[in-house]
Length: 142
Image (tube, rainbow, N blue to C red; front, side, top):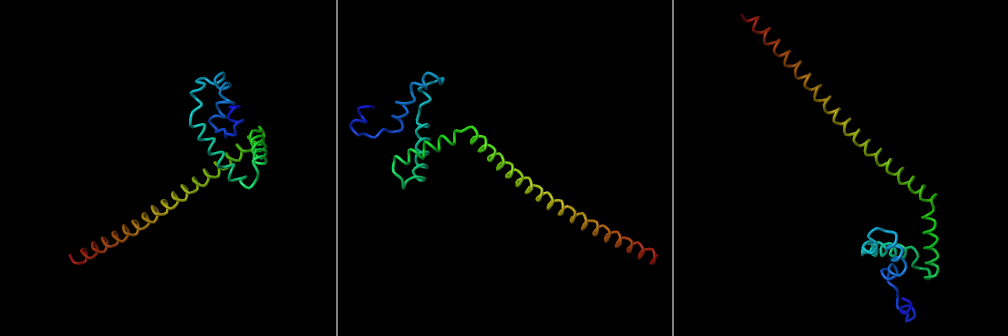
């Protein structure tokens, strides 16, 4: 890697991972080198693309400083707790909305059932009245 840098070649994320993280990973992670696969590189590409969008107008030195500061802030335990708290509150809001939608649908269904029952009661009373009229008519004609 030293020679590649000396010749001015760019170091890819995969080469950086091999150079800086492989030995530690082989010593500490079960499976070691098998875990250093393309998924990690793809994730790194996505993070780099996101950073590029954020800081494209700045020099590489300033971008590196911004990135290091952002990583330090995001890995701070207090920041991680606050982020988790915000994410949980968002989940609770979504759950409440979903439950209220279900409740609204249940109220609508209950309203429909009530209307059907009222209409059925009216129809039943009309049928009883008609039947009573027919009985009264039959009694008078006999």
